[in-house]
Length: 219
Ligand code: DX5
Ligand code: ZN
Image (tube, rainbow, N blue to C red):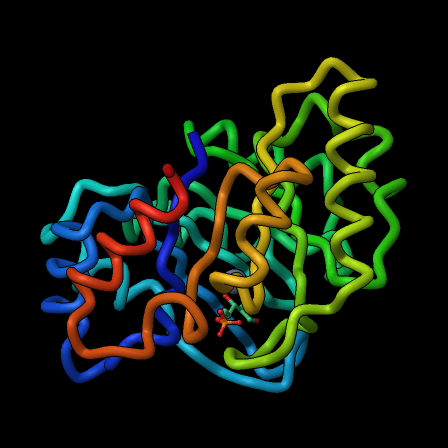
């Protein structure tokens, strides 16, 4: 089953609780929170207090995408705020295996996030330490960008590596996941979609958009 996760940085922040309610009624599977520090990426978004504000309104998993320079400093903070899954960028200032181990020690799912140009060889010695790989299909930092075509091959290559390693790692794709790119990325092995402006947040009727997208993905 392919999971749909709205990217809440793309939502109307003045109506976040209502948006979460509508999206959940429409059938989404988890919520994706993009955390940015203005250093690892040239942008700022949200923090742990936003998770706390929304946590009691839904039981759906909170997927935290840490686009920050020193993710290990913030793992416990987001765990306490209600995170269920945390992905960290291999390109940040991180001891990757140690950080993934720390996330799992907190009984959370651990993800490795990779920027478009980062080779998959980063995974060579952490296959057993990660539950998913977040493949950035745009350069991180902003919504509304265009899918980088070379990422199709990267998804296929990762899917093959997962098979070769006998791993059960999920492939998450993040960036311009649209009605055009979804069939292609799913066929290549993506199992977790991050959906933002191009597939969900281009209408006020989020319940209808989510239901339409859920039907499309699961048809
Ligand atoms: C970008 C974020 C994505 C983005 C998705 O750095 O990681 O989650 O918000 O938005 P769209 O779907 O518009 O690319
Ligand atoms: Zn993201």
